[in-house]
Length: 456
Image (cartoon, rainbow, N blue to C red; front, side, top):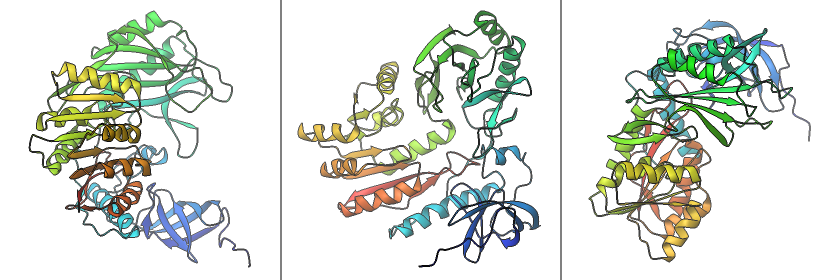
């Protein structure tokens, strides 16, 4: 069999129509049926492509010249949000982003031969400045400590002050903190040499409470000049209620270490979600877009059509956000979660809100559900809100063996959603009503959706 050769090589140029977008938000051009993924190009455009990298079955390219512009192009952005991957869809006008997300789910379901309607994506009125949490790397550039974001597919830091999708108050706080760190000559982390002190600055801000937490992630156990640095941050940022040093001494890409030292203030900050109070610590998983999260969870509860007497399992309960928001609509909620700190948070959040009909257990969801089934627990509804890798076959088996009337699947990855829905259908469930995309992360390629499955 003759070896297939790529029809392009590095530094070649060619003219092409952009016919599609990848899941990373790159434009797709084809030359002799060979795909070339082009940064900052969108469907409906004609471009001169410069080839930047060639693999055996695809290549990457850049726009040398835009020959014909799409009416969907948004030119009103700073290009750093595209080149760093902070907001890879920001070059698309917002209605086109919503359509792209709906189409992506439709295509993946079709590929899996699943017959389902996908509703129009529910968007945000103001789809910028929504993130309530920032984690930005700290590096030295030209002898100066900088905060910013890595250029796409690299570890080269691009200094940034306006992150476009983050709460503007967080952006302002990051500049203030950066300048204080510079003033006291704290050293930035060097990942090649594994030296220097400051690795990352994290800022969280309650959307409703406006309480702010600053986390300084350090390589070293000691934060030099900690007293004066803390003092200056407190004076400059009156919203700050908690300043924490997180120690991460390992040579790793993982952002946070296991040790948190409270340098000043509280261990946690508080915010509300659907009228409930939540405690948020440095390592807590808390949805980064509370405005849309409220919409998402309200819809999930509505779609479950809860009557008040149901037994519910929340299979990835985290700090209890779904469990606690549906508790008032049902008889009892059982939550299971694999992260110990999250289980503690969930119990604390239940107590803080005076909610008595929830029970949170530490463990793997699929194993705990088998235990519950053996104990005779018969849920009416199971909620699943898994990470991007989706559900395991064991969890699907455990869930369907319990034979709940309904399974409500909140997904953050349409590819694993399509795969998992296929398994549920084989196990005797069908999709009830349309799949509902919700734009939890505007300007990015991420898509949340709600699907309801009903026992045949």
